[in-house]
Length: 455
Ligand code: AMP
Ligand code: ZN
Image 1 (cartoon, protein in one colour):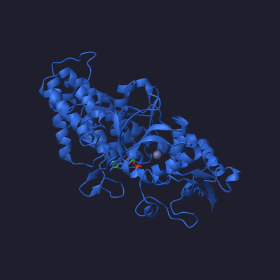
Image 2: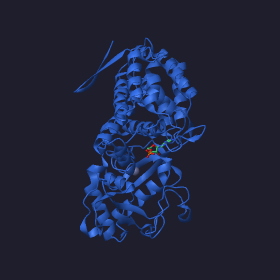
Image 3: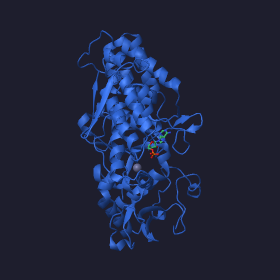
Image 4: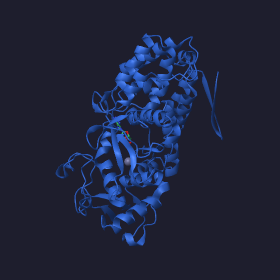
């Protein structure tokens, strides 16, 4: 078959034809969330961008021939801290925020990944990986930690293009006296008292139970779910170093084969104060956005710049996206869904061109202007837009929450209300209930959980 897609490969720094190793089994891995609190709308940029790629790959290779794995990081220092602060078992926290992440992704029109591996389900594979690295002399133990020795990977730095001397500046590299190289990273660390841990194999030379390092988790889950060398690995550009560089090093060393053939990194969502991030405290939560805007508006807003470019977030962007969707849906009114309409070839060509969203969206506007309702709908559907009927759209998206939110949006808000209650933020929980009521949705709590109905 011909291979129509070209992608900017962060590894080579060039645009390349995308040629999967096996077109019957195209593999994509994206680093998923650490589940202990609400993700902000910036965290959903990779969700939407790689959902778009997933859909495009399915379009070309067939839905059954694309395998997309996105992990859940359910063991981490920040999770342990959140569990202690809320006096809750870790699993209660991770289950709840996994559910919210899934519900919010769905409300933003993202397909579920084919496989969603949990880190804590792959501890045995992580230990095996460490064993292999120890056998090859690429890992060493020091002060109850097992570390990866970057001297054992000649290609270290090839992905991030970070010079070894510059590696420490400004990145998430932990300085510790027992490291042979400053950029050596932890594969296994001791569990402190009252921290969860797994039995450490005796030959690790570490006395107490331990837990895996973050980078190791992805390497083990990729091998377990997709194989040793995958087609595409994606994530936000902040993950390129050290996270992805370290994934490359340990998998490359252990398997004697490259981890991924194409690497893709999305640009940041930013605020006037800089990159949207929890540490800067300038975050906008999807939970709050969903109270005011349909998920499809948030999705289109996240699609409004090229995925490698920065995207500045503001209310105007949301209002513009809403206005655009109104225009699209208005043009679909009185055009019932026609079966078997193909998307516009120019639109698909724009997506094939390293997911050129600005040009693809311009194409949608041209189709609307030309009155090609069926092709407009089919093209929009390819990227998860225009999936409602105009009727449902105008009912659900009218201002001041007078319309009814979609089922997916309601489910997401109910999960968020549970989280607010759990965090003892009763004001927020009541606010969500009242907002839903104002939109004509009544929720009822019972020992079996929360049910809802429209009035
Ligand atoms: P984290 O929970 O920080 O590991 O982030 C989860 C995902 O969201 C990663 O792929 C990050 O690269 C991505 N991400 C975090 N902040 C932003 C942002 N402001 N803009 C775009 N992507 C982001
Ligand atoms: Zn990862």
